[in-house]
Image (cartoon, rainbow, N blue to C red; front, side):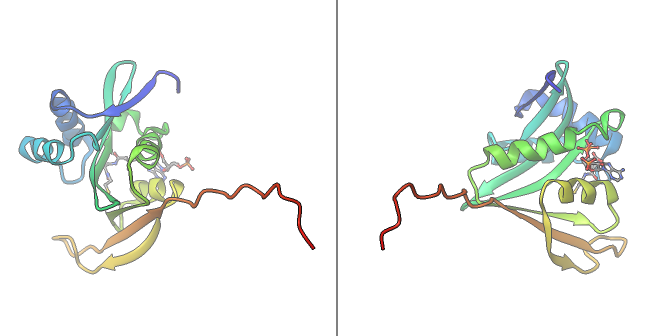
Length: 157
Ligand SMILES: CC(C)(COP(=O)(O)OP(=O)(O)OC[C@H]1O[C@@H](n2cnc3c(N)ncnc32)[C@H](O)[C@@H]1OP(=O)(O)O)[C@@H](O)C(=O)NCCC(=O)NCCS
């Protein structure tokens, strides 16, 4: 998708983020929550722009070498086209951390599919985490170790 741009979110994106939250988020964030997150994690939150329009966002932060995704959402009219994957890939590429964690409702099939596709694995379960009694799953992604170049030195005997 060459027309896709994933870039750091700014305060100017708040209205677009809120619009997407209201359209598709299961527990939509408020303006104060979004602004607070952008202030708290300057540069770590990203938006996806398609043809110049914000169509998705991921909010999170990095602390002490570990990243955490707090929320992610894609405009329902644009879901299923790889935008969620592009947002998560941008964090994995750009966040200065070796590990990213998040928490997801056990019954959120699209989100679980996205995280499985981007290399997250289950590392914990928060029983009855949600108000309706649903469990939350804790997922983690570890940055793969860099591949070692084979030594060019001839073996000595
Ligand atoms: C979760 C969400 C961000 C995914 O965004 P998206 O742009 O539709 O995801 P993608 O198109 O990049 O899909 C990523 C993978 O998940 C799979 N997937 C996406 N939606 C799916 C669905 N409804 N059912 C099953 N699998 C699905 C895709 O097949 C894809 O896998 P593939 O690359 O092997 O085909 C989007 O569904 C959303 O905004 N949901 C509402 C907010 C939410 O629940 N956020 C998660 C909070 S933890």
